[in-house]
Amino acid sequence: MRSRTPDRLCAEAVDLARAAAEETALPGMVGEHLEAVADGDRVVTHLFACKEPGYRGWRWAVTVARASRAKIVTLDESVLLPGPDAVLAPEWVPWSERLRPGDMGPGDLLPTDAEDLRLEPGYTGEDAPPPNSVLTADLPAETAEIAQIADTEDADVVPGSPAVQPAPARGDLASLADELGMRRARVLSRYGLREAADRWDESFGAHTAMAQAAPASCASCGFLTPLAGSLRQAFGVCANEFSPADGRVVSLSYGCGGHSEAAVMPAPPRPAAPVVDETVIEPLTLRPEPTGGSVEDTTPMEELGHS
Image (cartoon, rainbow, N blue to C red; front, side, top):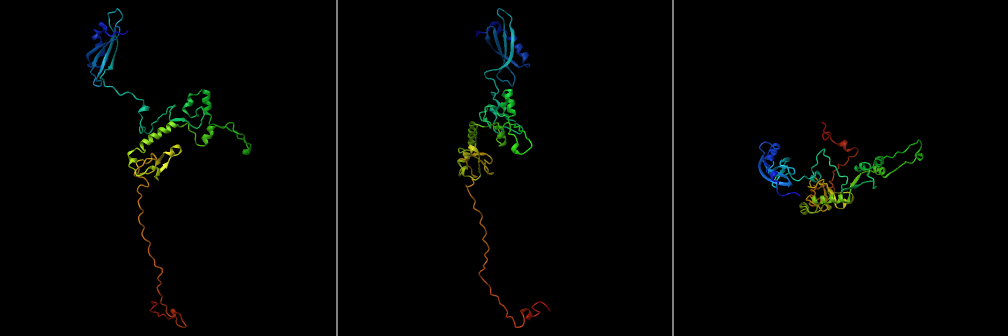
C-alpha cells in the first residue's frame, strides 16, 4: 500500500537529491526545491525547478529510497519530467494520418496497407492472392511458389501443323487476364469508390460557390469528358483550359462560367459576295464585209500600226 506521507528520512535528503540533479543537468540549470512526493513506502521523489530556456514548466525529478529499518538513504534515479504547465510537443500522429493531398513530391513512395479498405482483390476472384500481390509473402512456402508460377503456361511445340500441337498443360485465369490487359492485383472496392466520389464532390460539386453561380451544370457542357464504369453516372473530366477545374474530376452537377453553351459568341458577319450582272448584253457593231475581200484586206495600214 503506497503511503501518502513522505518518509521523514527520504524527505530530508534534499541535498542528496540536488547533487544528483546537478550532476545530470548542465551547470546552473537546477532551480529551487519545489516539493517532495511520496511514491511508496520509504520512496520519495524530490522535484526541482528547471532553468533550461527550452524547457519552461519542466522539473528535475530525483527519486530516493531507503531499505526497511535502514537509516541510509540511497539514490534511485534522476530524470527531467514535464510539470502541469510545461510546454510540450504536439501529440505524435502517424504519417499515414498526417499526409495530405499534394504532399508527395518526385521520388516519394506512398505504400498502401495490405488490408486497405479502399482496395479489394482484382482479377483472380480466388481466395489465394495473385502472384504480384503483397499478400503472397504471407502464404506458406509451397503455396507461394505455386502462386509465383501461376502466370506461366508452358506448352510443348512439336513440328507440324497447328492441328497436331498438344493442348497446353494448364490454362488459368491469370494468363487470360494478362492477355486481356486486366491483370491488377487489387482494384477499388465499393468503399474506395464511395470515398473518392465524396472527395471529388466536395471539391467540384454542386455545393461549391462556383457551381452556385454557374449558368448551367457540367452535364450539358461540351467540354465534359465522361468517366468509364459506374462513376460515369455522376462524374467526368473537365477539358476546358480556361476553367478552374481543367483536368480535374468534376461532378455532373458542378458548373462554372466556362460552360460551352453559357454565352455563345455570334460568328462574325461574312462580306457579301460581289454582284455580277450577267443579264445585260452590250450590242456589238460589225462592219459590213465588202465584196471580194475580207475585213483585213480593206483595213488601212495606218490602222494596223504600220507606216
